Image: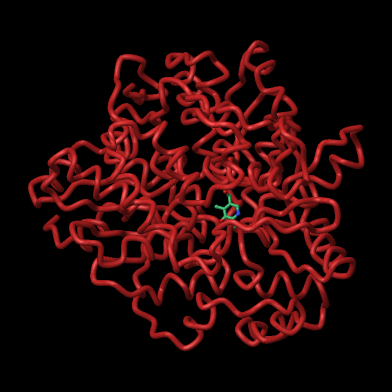
Length: 497
Ligand SMILES: *Cc1c(COP(=O)(O)O)cnc(C)c1O
């Protein structure tokens, strides 16, 4: 059976999986969603003995139905290999009485690697399948982790170029160094004078600009996206929820069919939406806890049914979650509206015009699987410190936000379900925040001198991603104002304005 993809804003448009991956964003500005969520066609009993790569194939073949078995297996094989520092790819670690699903064992030590190591392969395969001859320009806005992970994935991939915009001053020093030292003849990095929302809406506007697309086409280019709006990123993220459940079962931490809760540190709502898709596929998940930092627009949404981005943008110690417009929420709105494209388009239009929209009581009822929570900066730091003191485990601030939300949920509610906390970054990526949470004395130390200190404290090996950037050459120094993003893109591509 061929599963087609529709735009969240237009019921009449439908495309194949490979077309959706190539386009990134639908022409009407909507996001591509599968017409329905397929059911897992294999039992957890059978899944529990399978490898990550095998489970990846089992999940993705049900979504990417126009890929051949060989194509999909090739993509998976090229993605989930020695770039990851463990054969398990996504190991489960028990910390206290919660299970941490560590998604930071890839090349850039954040969970973005889980999807961005396969996206370039899915995209180039899609280009071949659809006889695309133009060079593909990946345009990406990053809150810190996507940019590096995307460049690592696309570096020197023939037929592609990648341009990354990150908010200047809005990412951690390690994140910034990782990006500006990026190698590859097809990579470009731009520090934007604005925050992540500026970067994201700027990139979206370029995607929707017909004139610009024509200009590009004349020069032999076409845009695509590596942001989590691309369905080619979302579906690979479903895999690790299936995998985690199967492994909990294998290690007899749960019994067959036992429902678990999942807490996800959330920004753009991609990771937690993948958990929701996994639940819809049949993975026994009870509650989805959506954890925010002080930019708690999602928490307020789950509490009130009103999404309101009109508020101060706060820079926190978990920069990859400093987001007020969570793009992937649009896919959830579409689902809870009963796949009502008109309703979804209306909400998104209100968001664009007024910065706020309200969902109907019926839609709110369909949100009952979700619970919002948030952690303040103080609570996040305290969580890192308390966990370290109690267990010796050092977690990054994003993970700590989730761990805190999970813990306070457990304390408040009478819910005995086992808790899975999604661990999205290595603490080595956020050295200053992590180390000062443990001991104030690190406040005055140089970020890069903290590498050794963290190594001593945690006993975990220093990841290559960190050791290799310490003395790496800076290769990208471009900056631009929000209003000049188009000009910058044209300049990078060598197109006359
Ligand atoms: C991107 C990111 C998040 C947020 O994930 P979304 O899919 O955008 O909700 C959380 N933690 C880290 C470390 C990230 O890089």
